[in-house]
Length: 376
Image (tube, rainbow, N blue to C red; front, side, top):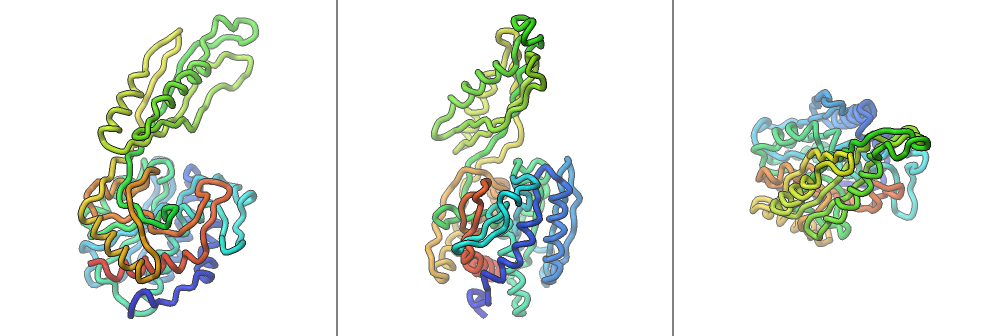
């Protein structure tokens, strides 16, 4: 049977996806993410998977690994890699409830990336229900910390990807519906200013404000942005009492670099800003980094297969390199053929307008099923 003829129904898929969207799972709430993992594990088990729960580390939630009956289980195959954490805090459902309107479905994490993960689950469900056998064994790996750079599960992902024939990531599709076959580097930095406290009203001149120093440094850092290497400060923590000159201020920076040389130059530039000035120390600590992923021949071949499948479905699948890192940075940089951003179509990810095109559920399920049936 042609996998494109499997009976995918977007409305039925949306009904199955809704509980996932309504199970809020912000990265920093390990218990909430683990509840989401348990829900996904239940649904995977129901379609015939053997599911292993991998306890969380470093304060993050659990991961789950699902395998399906196959005569070549344990041999190189296909890894479907996705994350079930979101950027939306508990309570977001009050502002962004699950709802359907004008062919769109709204909800926290529905686009990034619960919708895509559920699409692949449904694709495998229909394959198994019809009695088909994928040529290669398929493994699903869902992880809890992608939205903060994958500090706890990078090794798990790389270990699972090593030696596989292909890695598929159901991250949201590009704005034109296209896939991603390469990604720029994403680096994180922690900034710290250390000043001297004093009473802000009685002895202002005796203090050295860490907040004021950080404000000046933020302008310096963001002014280093170019088209090839960007710097953006997204988090600041400082102060507790308005009548105290703050002695400490912390900030977090996200940097995007298109090439390894751009990354190296950017790291050197931000680290060169360190030092003491006017009684305030400025310290830069490098955090997690997603490596540059440049498309290799195996990835291009995987894309060509996907492009032909999409032409049969009825649309053109474009592809290119992109910013906004994913766990594809890791597997692609390892040289494993990797196809990223083949999940649902939508807009507004990471905002209170996050939504998907409902009809893209069936469209992407056809693509997922065909890939799992045709990759060899």
